[in-house]
Image 1 (tube, helix red, strand yellow):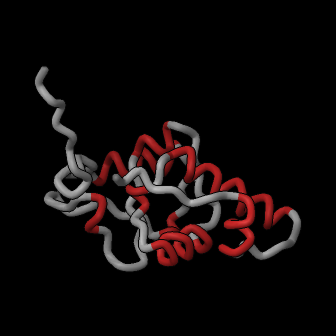
Image 2 (cartoon, one colour; image 1 turned 120 degrees about the vertical axis):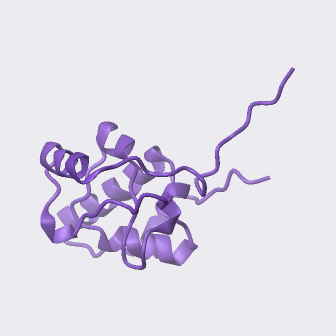
Image 3 (cartoon, one colour; image 1 turned 180 degrees about the horizontal axis):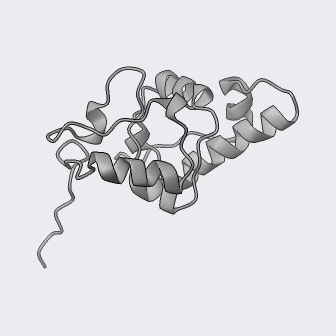
Length: 124
């Protein structure tokens, strides 16, 4: 039985164009205040510049929306993760947690998040 080759996030190149970026922004109500940009032709998602977060288009198709990136950026920096390392379900949990905190006028902190969720890796 032949083994199935798994593509690395480091070699998957974006096919996004300026036109498709604007279409995505319009469709999913992404504000210009987030300074969205499309990657250079040879960039992979892990090549995002500092203070930028690379996002897969499929995240939006799955219903994920970003109302505030600050807490997500804090988590990514704390765990030394790239957004490409987080599953869509985990991303939804993070966003839901942050929205719950904001609705309760509680500042979301990683210590509180860790009280409710356990970070796991699928690495061997």
